[in-house]
Amino acid sequence: MISLPNQPKIIQKKDNKAIFEIEPLYPGYGVTVVNTYRRVLLSSLEGAAITQVKIKGVSHEFSTIPGVLEDVVMILLNLKRIRLKNWSEEPQTITLHVKGEKEVKAKDFKLNPQIKLANPEAHIATLTEKKAELQIEAKIEKGVGYLLLEEREEKKGEIGVIMIDAIFSPVKKVSFKIENVRVGKRTDFERLELKIETDGVITPEEAFSQATDILVDHFSLFSKFGKEEKVAKKAPDTKTTVAKEKKESKKKDVKKIEIESLKISERTKNSLLQNNLKTIGGILRKSETDLLNIKSMGEKGIKEIKKALKKFGLELKE
Image (cartoon, rainbow, N blue to C red; front, side, top):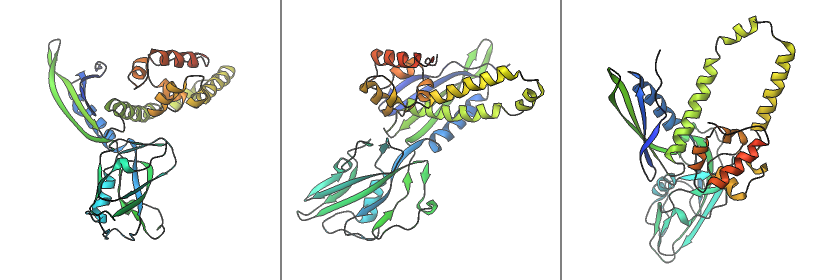
């Protein structure tokens, strides 16, 4: 029987970088596990990005703006580097309007409460004259991975609207190291060190957790393959089956309840929402330790959450 490794642990963390250690892995499983994680981390996590812009006085990307050092192409490249968090499921619009000699940065955008900037000091343009003016309207959308302009299915918009490639992924870099470790008399078991660097919109821990959830959802689905026929061959207990279905249905409905409707403090609600935990189902995927690692979440908040879940006959993951 293939033995399972210990729970992953963080052995080093700094800013938006963290190194996760997983050991001891059965021989050959280091590459198997890390390649799967790396693929999901780099391509499958949801993020937000600027997908189109409108610059006053500019009709296309091959233009220049009086009094602005950078041409429009360079400004668009700089806008692509802005990292954002969109709390809303709907597209959002942010605006920028600056005048006079100055360096224009991402923090000069006027944001609504649904948008968070991860790199406010990101450079956008340089205004070189007192009469210079830069006015930008940008649309922010959610997505996964990297979306080329050519792959967009949107119809041609109004004149002056410039579509741009979108970098949605919140993960910047994933690297790893595998080395042998001793388990009993064997020296060919493996230790995996997985290094994750994010753009600051989410933490490395959140990225690792989201990637894990995606993989678990897939393999849980695959694990049911071929089992339906075996279940069908057994004579079902009608009463038991109906009762079980009702119980499962009720449980699923409870998981869909939104955080806003729970009787917990606003501070606790905001902490959960800012970490993309919007429903009871999202909370149930976390352990008490996971929740304590959330920024602004303390023991008081955990007690509130446990009390709210208890009313539904639920409790946090072990």
